[in-house]
Amino acid sequence: MSSAGTYYQAVEEFFVSRRGDPLFISNADWLLIDGWKRRGIPLRIVLRGIADALDGHAHSWSRRQKVGSLAYCGSEVDVAAERWQRALALGEEETARLPDLLARMADGLDAGESLGHQARPLAEAIARDLRERASGSGSARETEAWLYERESALREALTQDDGAEAVARLRADIERELLPYRDRMPQTVQDQIRAEALTRGLFEAHRLPRLSVFL
Image (cartoon, rainbow, N blue to C red; front, top):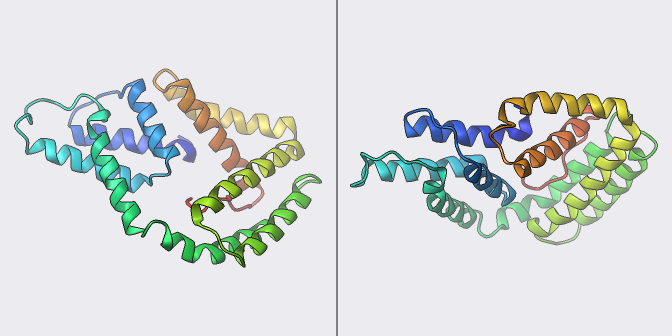
């Protein structure tokens, strides 16, 4: 599966393996995973929460009953996410490293390869903005929203420059990797994976850094 879908696949495989017998997770469970990903909870934190939930079940009075849904682990994933956020001191760790991170993004944009007439000036403008922002202040989460807008604009420029044929090949590769999951994943999750995979593929093709604090 594409790197965009690895998060979803890893959660499913970990839950199924820890549960102890084969089980296809439900549409509701796929949406739950999608919610964790959209909230920016790292994969390792989600897996920690699932493990805590299933470990707790194994020592409970109801341990003879199989856990039937990933939703059973939801509260423990939330607890693990809260611990992770506290460990980051409410974002202070990310904010402290933000100037260096933004400067590296700017350097990566300047070094992008084979950029077209739309993407090249846009990448240069974003790089200048990144260096200005690196010298100022702002939280990691505020910066993330700003970066998302710039990345979306750059993705659109790359799409236009690369042309319909190249983008169609990339989309075809994404569809092949999604094929085993189409009948199992809700459409909203599939669309999220497609969009993320397209962005990743375009940026990798031009050796551009992703514009995110949390990737």
